[in-house]
Length: 239
Image (spheres, one colour):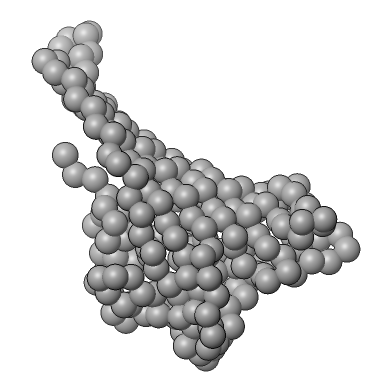
């Protein structure tokens, strides 16, 4: 049984880290707010669970939480894109990211590792307003159309924080005997004074169901369910 492992997790996180929110009287503007010369250090805790069921057996596994530290070093801003080096204990790789969140270039990666990405609305974004986009995402070595929903849920003026909730449900192919589902949902907490994420929490769920149909009777031959929960916190900002 294959799962989506950590070699793309940091790539995936980048989509939610690189935001800055400027506060106005009636609306918000969401855009990248990175500063060249600074390094943003984050801590990520990942918890994974899975289960499978066949006609003869049932298996379940709850992995211990895994902790990983990584950093985003902002090199420069050129040609309408931030040049960012993402550093983990194992590797360093570069991304070119536009102010609206799109990845405009990733020269150090293989084609199969192109990350998920979000595109944020231009101009003012009202509290309580939903923003929907359609973008192709890569899961493993395959690409699928995906619908993203984002909501600017609330602004806490006393604490100078903003909350954005998000969800994604790709259109995975299905057949009469095989069904797959994938969903992602979570929230972001922003520090408006610094224009950075203080915390992000989200979960990813995947299920696969293979049936055997005999005349008018359908039997479940194989069922797989996986869930990964992510908890992200800003640890430090270094010059």
